[in-house]
Image 1 (tube, rainbow over the protein chains, first blue to last red):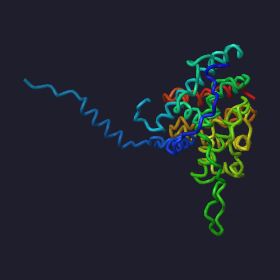
Image 2: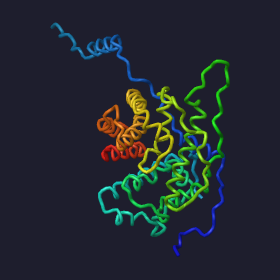
Image 3: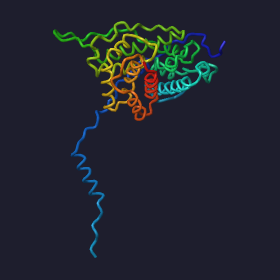
Image 4: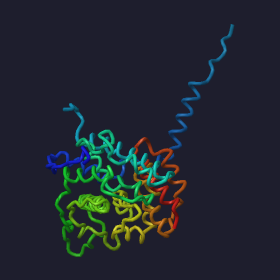
Length: 63
Length: 267
């Protein structure tokens, strides 16, 4: 006889919170992610302009 | 007694992830090697090999459902009562028995309003739980463990349900553990009849970057393809993309692997 074999039935001691958690996990809904990102050219334009200003080299100093 | 601040949902979720990792390991072991020798390590040969030793693991087994046996069903390995998975699932059904059946409530009758073919969200969730319990109990019965599970009468998908393909495909995603070889039900019939709606649902999930849902729906398309129903979307690149970008979830990885195995099987 296997030593780990159960010789008595276990009694369910599940709580309502556990059963509710199980039901929630079993019926996993689709993710609440946003739809695919939309193309917004005005945002890209402002971003590129700001990036260009930030990365532009300083003008040479006159001596 | 372990002290943990985790909620039951967090504990069950983590346990389900561990169970999914185990299923993936078993699938890898059974996939290439001789089936009879590969099953040996997964029998209860000692305390260290025991499965379902904690309440969290039993809850994880209930969450995973029939997917716990996916490696055996996919590889055609004989099921028997000595499997660790079978013992754990039987204990899980004792610890967390299925809810009493409740037939879906008809929508509030409005004169002249058509009856919706797809039930509302709450009824959809209840139906999904009933079908998942049915599938787990069905496979468990083949292992030689009978558990009392209410029959899914009254929860069959209605004709025309797939016309509302967004809700229907999400419902089918919730039923992805049923998409295994050897299981058959009205849900499977509905999936075979509506590959186009499943394809739309899979593409929508991909566009939403909801890769978990996409993988779950793709399992139904893969199962249909294995049974001779042509898939409206190419499954290989879809599953490959989900495998790359689907995140670290082992349950998603298991869905992808099952889908790949079914798609490889072909008609």
